[in-house]
Length: 253
Image (cartoon, rainbow, N blue to C red; front, top):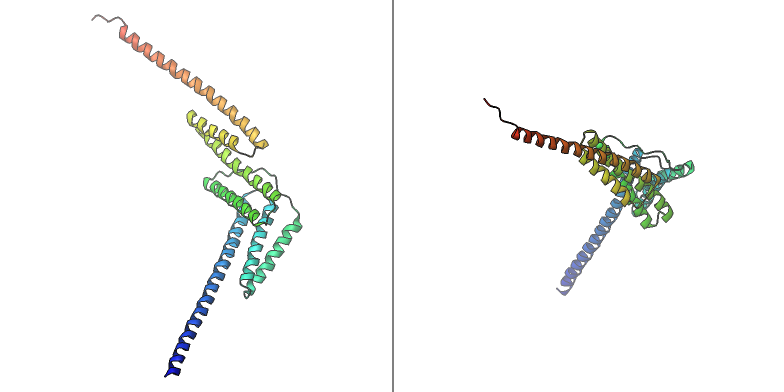
């Protein structure tokens, strides 16, 4: 009887231990899958950003940074899932892409950045620039990007972001000006000036654009003064006519 009880207790202990080991393995697998999914998300996001670069001036430096980001994430995935042979092939493919970009030796293009007329397209470009700046900051924090390169590329993106904001406000201001909505035009242009003034990055573009907008504002201020003077003259003339009508001699019938 004692032996049977002992066997039952031993069996229960074995079942508990086996379940604990199984749960531990399942927890480890879940953690592995979560870590792999995180790296996969980084790769997918980076590939989308690489496609979005087609809307910006050519910048091989930025392409190299993003390619390295994808490569690092792929290497991490390969460590997490060493049994996945496809990942090793993906790593080799990305290493070849990084090397090809490095061998090209191209510099970032300084071509002018022309804004699209389509508002949705413009919003998409702004979102892309914001994501790129956040990505650069994240790569610097991880130690994958040196401070000098980060500052150089971030300032280049910041300059584009500033130009989009300023040019959009100026465009709206000029459209209001054409419709003779001088008050609205002045508000848009003053906001554009404020955007330039508040920017920590002051470039030649900022200097020339500030002068250009100030000249337009002077013209608008002059037009508003003329308009107000004409309105005042019309009002005075109307009041004078009313007085003449009131005090003119009454006709005898």
